[in-house]
Image (cartoon, rainbow, N blue to C red; front, side, top):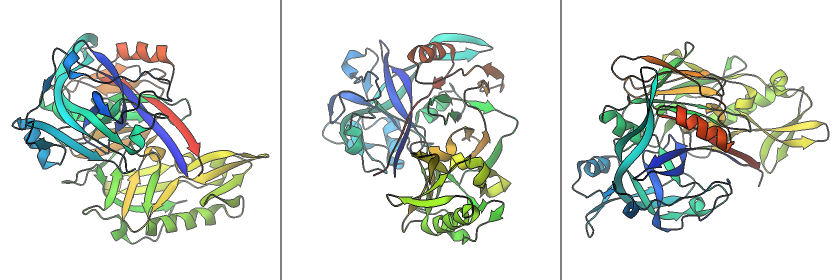
Length: 418
């Protein structure tokens, strides 16, 4: 099954400021942009957006980052940076889970944004940040069909933008997102905490490179599945990861087999199961909510993430008068890794509270307004109208001019069975 759901946003960098489209990725740390000397950077995009290459030479506030820079030294500890002895430039090489990769060098320049202060929007705010200048891209990053200008990593290591801004006292060390799951896409990304009374929180597993959670069990239709708890334990290259850069969701093979068996048993009397290109699908003639059970992911601290059928099923197409829905959870063979991608993250507020080392969530209509705590010192709450953030260009520009460190999210979605 090849399904893609790409959430991306727009940032302004440099002097004069230029706009760049970047994918939102909580599974990596660094913001990087394709640079003017890039080999393999796409020249056009099937997303109907104008791609731009960042040119350090055309920005009056740009500077290179040397190997002796303290920020480069800090990045060495998390493998987010390296050093080119010949040029004395701080550099990087990243490989992603889909096999694609990028390499380049670091630059420092200004990030432009609007800020909210006591209810008033102050425009033309800037902050110096360090980000990657990509000179080589490989794999799917070279393809133009879903090309963007770069990737905005929201990890918790020192070189992530959220860590850099919080260390300067500009934003709290917390960010939030709400990803719309409908085909029109959209959502909101907040450098700050979205406040909602029904949030539930679970602790982050400390000393991990990703956003690892302590998943304890899975329930289907209110029944806890018989899965050895060691399947979910966290260690090197093992555990449960929250990753907005992943489209679907993935389970270790032991958990996947138990999950599939429970779902099939729950619906065996009412739907017709079929295999489509090796994927388990079902032909149904009524609403999936009337047929398929709720699923609960149960975490440490008593927090549960309720998944409705649309949170673990993907609609393929219609056959006659029946709709074909396929299981969106995939199996990871031989590895005890669980990845919670956009399939389960959508239509929920997610708060990454790095100060208190926890992640929270609640169901939410991501086209609605949100309450945001934006003041670092007083915890002041501001009311922000998120608006309808979709693929309409004029709407996006209007929203972006209103928000303070709040970035509209755009989404491309599609489905292809191979």
